[in-house]
Length: 102
Image 1 (cartoon, rainbow, N blue to C red):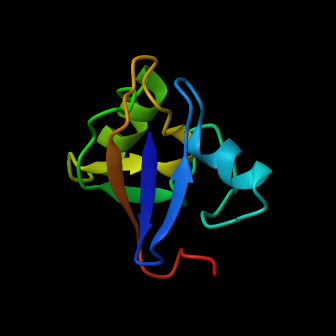
Image 2: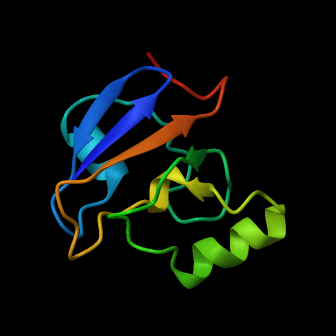
């Protein structure tokens, strides 16, 4: 699956089960803040425009997002994984202003 990171218009390709942050790191493209990677700081909160092809939030991420009181379309960038049955979908993920690294 492809994830288009806006507003930078960069595309990352994830295999089933791969984590977005790992793919970006391996490509040497640090587009998201990477303070903790364990769903407990919230610095990498993003807006997911359509979550087809993404694995649903795991319990820790869902609990943390609920505590933050964010919109249902928001996820933690460090926890975004392609679903195991992901197809050739493209998902748009909006990096919040002030977080985007160029």
